[in-house]
Amino acid sequence: MYSVENLTVSFGSFNLLDDIGFVVDKKDKIALVGKNGAGKSTLLKIFAGLYEPSKGRVSMPKEVTIGYLPQQMKLNDDRTVKEEAILAFDYLLKMEQKLERLNLELTEREDYESESYHQLIDDITHLNELLVMEGASNMQAEIEKTLLGLGFMRNDFDRPTSEFSGGWRMRIELAKILLRKPDILLLDEPTNHLDIESIQWLENFLATQANAVILVSHDRAFIDAVTSRTIEISLGKVYDYRVNYSKYVELRKERREQQLRAYENQRKQIEETEDFIERFRYKATKAVQVQSRIKQLEKIERIEIDEEDNSTLRLKFPPAPRSGSYPVIVENVSKSYGDHLIFKNATFTINRGDKIAFVGKNGEGKSTLVKCIMGQIPYEGKLEIGHNVKIGYFAQNQADLMDEKLTVFQTIDNVAVGDIRTKIRDILGAFMFGGEASDKKVGVLSGGERTRLAMIKLLLEPVNLLILDEPTNHLDMRSKDVLKEALKEFDGTVILVSHDREFLDGLVDKVYEFGNQQVKEHLGGIYNFLEKKRIDSLKELEKKVQIGHTEKKEETTSLTKLSYEERKEQQRSVKRLEKKIEDAEKK
Image 1 (cartoon, rainbow, N blue to C red):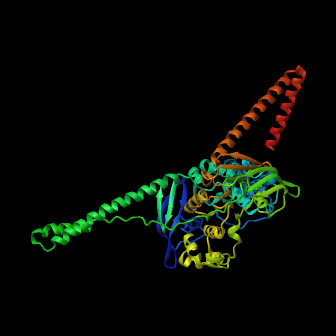
Image 2 (image 1 turned 45 degrees about the horizontal axis):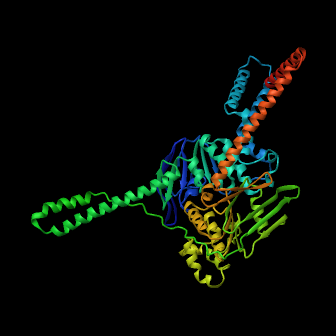
Image 3 (image 1 turned 135 degrees about the vertical axis):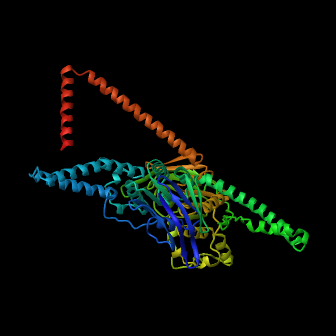
């Protein structure tokens, strides 16, 4: 059991977290929720021992192991993927090395009756038992299973980590943390670097194999699948709900409505009591009743209403100028980097007003095709941008491309032209950069704040084709909901590269799947696509099982055709091989 006791985090006179407390049980799966800047990541850092609170503490037993995945981290590039992953079992490797040394010493010793010789045998036995208990024999299998689950291919295992993007290297770190199976997992936006299939694998792992989990994520479908408890941080306080996120949203609304009703009833009662006291204060015949009412008033415990955090993003895209009927036409488009083929013969047409999603594993070409559409990289085949198409593009690294030395206001002022310059303060206010926040340097902004700032730049001129590459990374739940509604109302065409199922649900009407060097079109929403994928996977599995049965049957038939002597020789050969295996295992 781990407990947060009277925890306060202050910055000057401002309390980010104000005297909070809660208890985490050994198998709790907790979603930490709240707007950007509420203190979620700070609380995770305190749990991980990387940040000291101003007051209070986190109490946990000394032997507790912690696995912490931050949003950003510095990564080592000196090893291969598998060499890096095996570091998760560093303690097992050291135990194996020690066992080898002790076994070598045992072969060289001849003092069989001495006490130290018997102690040596005990130490070897103890180490062997420990290694069996820790599952050392399954170490390689666990590494491969976890890396494959997180989207790596077998031929990636021996590649240097330096060949991978930052997102893939974060997956390696996540694999190491999961392989250690710590007592408490602290995950800060773990899905930001994963594709839909890897997210579904991680969901299953956390739900079935992990111990205590505290995670920060803005992927609603993910936290609903993994967590059964929601702790909200709002205006420095915490509110603990022992339900998943979707149920929490309902309960939070009900709680506030109940508070408001109780507050109104109590206020009415207090007003009536005060009115009675005021009217009859100086009447001798009512003196006893007045004193009774005064005492009654003093005893009333005043109901407080949770302060509602109403600051939220207000977003509306400008009217889209009318484009041609087909904003994007792709015919037999292929893209390679040297000998490495990304995709080939991609062919599809995007109609005016379509809202589509590009999905698939990372590295399969989603962002690459976006760059082809943007004309940023060369390609083979034919790709036409339709008549009067004006593109608004949000890149994955858009938030990182801004000058960190500029203020929020200067960043927008530098790109604004014409009349819009007189409305910069109003626009910044609508994006929660009102007042002093507009004078913040870009370098001190959180990931969510940078994403919002990049969105403002996108809105400064009217467009009719929006291409958004992972726009929800770092956005909180409310901001994502507002962006989703704004995209629904947008009367132009939208191409979304995203792995956020809940965000795509009800927004897109067509899905393009990238995989196996192909681009396939699927009509319908994201959950239609995922259900079809699941059914296809089951069919493929059944097909493999049937093929396996057929092969086995053919093998049995061929055996029956062998002569008696040939069958006997085969049996003898099998026994010899089994004996060799047994000897090798003993050795």
